[in-house]
Image (tube, rainbow, N blue to C red; front, side, top):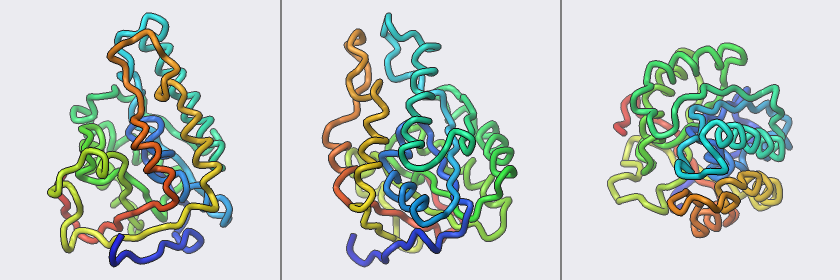
Length: 237
């Protein structure tokens, strides 16, 4: 990204928390940084907001209870590839697709998780990343994070380049762009993404089920991750 500064994982204040609206968002959006943090000896934690249960609503083989269990297992397996053990993961189990109704539950759940390991840095989905659950997570997560003075806030994107309009991108004064060359950590990032098999075509009995677009996965593995450090107190979703 033009004008972006280089992000140095080793100097990010720790612990570093990554908040994911769905299982796989952290692998796609910031898997390289998470792996780099582990290599630099920085402690990383992960918080999952939703149960991920809406991706295949018509699957006979994967009713919601089975699907949510599978997606949780995939999430933890993917994070293990990035160096985050299950003991440093927390889940809220909120309904996939309905985070806009769960603002207080997100804030209170995040606060409870963060108090176990007060964050020095929070990685969270960008305010206008074009997915309703990502946008709904923004303000509640900021409220929780700002209970910890000095926390550094870095927004990541998943769908912005795939679906975003010009108005969805950060505006002048909202953020400071940072980039990270993740080529040294592409192998664990690729394994983390591949751990999410339910989202990569494994479930074949729901003709309307969700599959990650190949273009999105390819972009996630292009060797660079971009972050937007939050500068403004008020960034509208």
